[in-house]
Image (tube, rainbow, N blue to C red; front, side, top):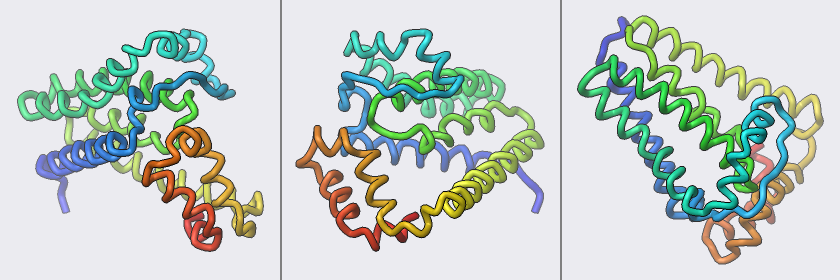
Length: 212
């Protein structure tokens, strides 16, 4: 089936819809940066995180709480700005997509340095702007396919790693991962329904194991 502009419209609309659905989920559960109110950060020993940390922007945010709200607004406003520009001019929208990538990169790097969530779950928000930067339909198709194969490799390699490390044979692993990745949230917001759900999953190791 030949690719048409309608396919691009559909992908763009689904991206924005999915993005804002996750935004409302985070808003409901108190996961926005301004709601988390971070007071410490974790060290991540990779080159890109080191560059961000050398800039000191993550420490600046810890020392300036109004910056949390500004970061939230900038990050969650970008898809809407892109969508509006996309409906008017594809060339302008591609420029907005470049700005979106920069905003997403800085926000996600800082947000995941604070003990809230892992950076792996934000990989789509880091990579998807590359698709939106394209102006030709052919380029859009090739980048879309490249992202598709990248995520297939991402999940396949994760599965292989679990076998190599023996995690697939450890029935308690997923429960331990849930407690480790959410420990700060479990302590800071014990009354939230999301916290109760994490506790329930961690206490049901067999069910949690099926998610591995």
